[in-house]
Image (cartoon, rainbow, N blue to C red):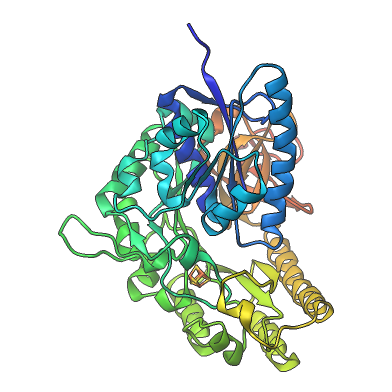
Length: 464
Ligand code: SF4
């Protein structure tokens, strides 16, 4: 019997890439590829790349430099290693990658992952293959579902892609070019995928999409359903206790989604709503299609629907033409909203986007200084949000064993990591935990009804 070949998939960037990497592994499993955590013993290495972060392309080339050495060593040992580049950098710069990096056998864009077995067979046959098409068939119909065993291995919390692509064309963003136009999966296919995950022990599902709240998939009634309606349907899956979704656009927050926050206890009280800037002038230059006032109105609506909701966001500082007043408008918006955390980025031009061609690009030192000021404001809010957790009790979903013996690691409804002394049998369970301490990265707590020092159950005293 031949031993299975091994595939190592290295994922960069967003949750969509993490999900895509799992689906690639699931599609390759029936072809005889077992997953491995290291490139060194793999027969096939796939870099699943991200184009959003600064220097993403350089990162890919530096990885490829290492893989070239690995491939040469393997060849000297009489072993063939196939190297593939997938994801958004592959989509945007596939031909250039092939030209610059001879180590690469295959470039595959996100819309073609269902074709991987055939593409890899061609690459293994000695052909250098590029597939960055937007094929007419629905890749989700063809991509394989994970086995029960693979789902178990991946834990109690899972991502499910419900929507891909974006039609918004923000002037700084490559997504509309790399992922194409908005496409939504039909409701019942998503329901079936979530039901399969739940049967394998998943308790929390995060519905993902580049612009997830633009979801408009076909429902069982033949009509287009909103994300709010989809969330109601998914909440019916037995065993699914927690729902989340990301990433949303402020212009697509409709009433059904706000109502879902009010009506669905399973929908966790966190809304990640990127704003990018607090200045209307910059929002217009970014082609964000919403104003500061609209954004704040959505925040207020969500707070009315779910008073304990927390907000997170994405910000870009130093967009072309941003002056000190624009930047101060961003700082004042941060004050006004009060975030639990946020991602902050310095503007960096993405080739092929309109913002890259704008005249009034800002000097690096101005961008860096603004980034630091914004980050300080966000850090203060993050620290305050975590500090007010101490003494409170949260339901924690236990995900895995913790750092120390006897400890489990889980997440609060607000996604904060929580470490608790609890038996391993509680992995997958949700239990109330009283937060006793915070550190730089985690909250620490004790199971409700347990002693904070000994972690033993507190027994009720016999009454007189
Ligand atoms: S809405 Fe989001 S994904 Fe779409 S273009 Fe704008 S930043 Fe990119």
